[in-house]
Figure 1 (cartoon, rainbow over the protein chains, first blue to last red):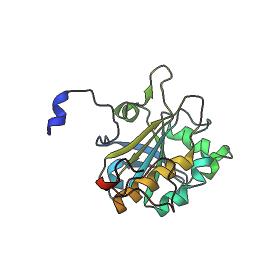
Figure 2 (spheres, one colour; figure 1 turned 180 degrees about the vertical axis):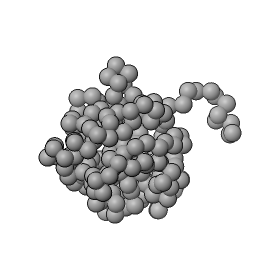
Figure 3 (tube, one colour; figure 1 turned 90 degrees about the vertical axis):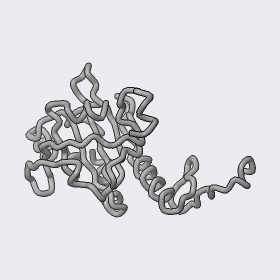
Figure 4 (cartoon, each protein chain N blue to C red; figure 1 turned 60 degrees about the vertical axis):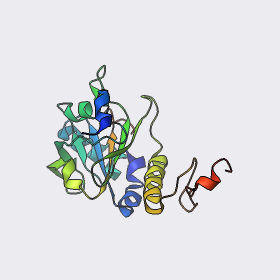
Amino acid sequence: MNSKDNINLPFCAQTTDWAPTFSAEAYDPVQKKIRKIGLEDYRGKWVILFFYPSDFTFV
Amino acid sequence: MAAVAAIHEQFKYINAEILGISTDSVYSHKVFTEVSPSAAKVTFPLLSDRTHEISKAYRVLNPNAGATFRATLIIDPEGMIVTKLVNPIEVGRNVYEILRLLQGIQYGRQTGQGVPANWVPGQSGIIRDPKMIGLI
């Protein structure tokens, strides 16, 4: 805890926040397999998350 | 999705991995990459956030749609969010800007220099020097 935590603003997953960890099923189009993927599998690498509303729409 | 796939190699070259995430099922993701000519080019995993847990954790769920906003997050190798962009619902992303942002973050960390507006790779940054304040 540092002093900044005392201001009690809601967590907004914004720049300089720790990225919430997650684990989810994913479709891997290279291996053509469904597999579990977790954010922590990528520690040591930069990760870019592309959230998109729906398959069959643009990114 | 083809727009992101087109520069996937450039992201890999700078030690970055791409994850696509929507609230669709993995079955939908599979068919999407099989039948859509643009999604057929995708070479990164598509995650299924059926429970909306990830979208909520990142505060990018559009509750009116049960789907996520067009949000882009860059996470550094230690697990810290270094940028978050949320596009308009109607307008797709500029993937080159996302690449430029990561290149700029890496350049700034490597050189300690400031990375000014409209910087592109190959240009120098701004050296932090109190003597220069007000002179640029």
